[in-house]
Image 1 (cartoon, rainbow, N blue to C red):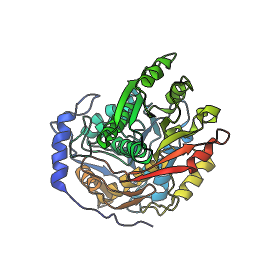
Image 2 (image 1 turned 180 degrees about the horizontal axis):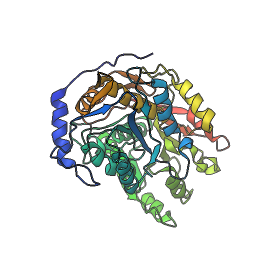
Image 3 (image 1 turned 60 degrees about the vertical axis):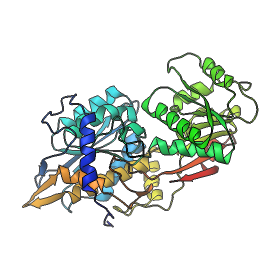
Image 4 (image 1 turned 90 degrees about the vertical axis):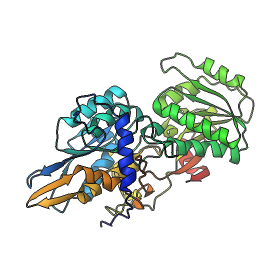
Length: 427
């Protein structure tokens, strides 16, 4: 079943964003420099015996492609959607590894650009990889839709100003960190009555962006940020970080690190670093961390996407959350509650819908208009996905802002935390 997108077109805003993006773009990594940086022009022609080419860039290092729930979701979405116009199959070309690094993103982008028939990319997994991959891909006329980039710099400050790394042609079905920062601040200040808080990050665009977003929102509510500490990833001990934070006497500490780093940092936090009643908050990607099995982890809060949406379905394929998840787990087993596989599925169907809308038949040849592809995506509104109702703004933010705070109470049953919601946030 395929439903029609509910869209509102704002071509003037799209054009304005293109001008802004051009100012931020670079022509590195071998991307064409034809004076049209940040814009899409031209068309791709696909013969009757050829496939429409798209690609997926995700963090695959250390595992096979088929072991990534995000890549599996992309594959399933392509299969569930079926041939474009009923006859043109879509080819993913195999998963590309963005490695969650600038170097990985750059290499993956180069691999994509070797085939001039590629229309768009689902990815990257990490914001830092997107910062390197988005400029050459978008300058070459491709669109890029990420399921899990959340750094505000890739889109906007949600107040009408483009981010430092915003490029026309870049979109995401993930949320903007400013949204989750607001959610955590609201939970601590309004729900728990905390007035003093600290944050820990590692300088990565994602972790620092989230810490900054939280600090700004908490301060706006009237709270005081006592410290925002940046850790060194390779440090043997983080005891000094906890000492510095404890000196500020915070009532809450927000840890915005990636799971492995957060696990390492939390291992150096001593029971006597703070007085009783200090709220310790980590992001929901921490659901799979072994730290949750340690006795001292009881009482930890995990903040992130609200994953309780079993009745949502994707309007382009008619598939529901439970159906897609069942097929993923049948292939690779249980996946973390923090995985962005639903966003990956929605990103893929958004791209396929856009390609179908932006293409027409010239005899038995499919002609895809790159500019029309971007116009379609920039005008998406009211799209029903696995992650809720999606709408794309002029800077590329399409994701539904639905968040929750989970409390971890039982170290003998870490999985139970995913069902123990103590706070909800919608915007």
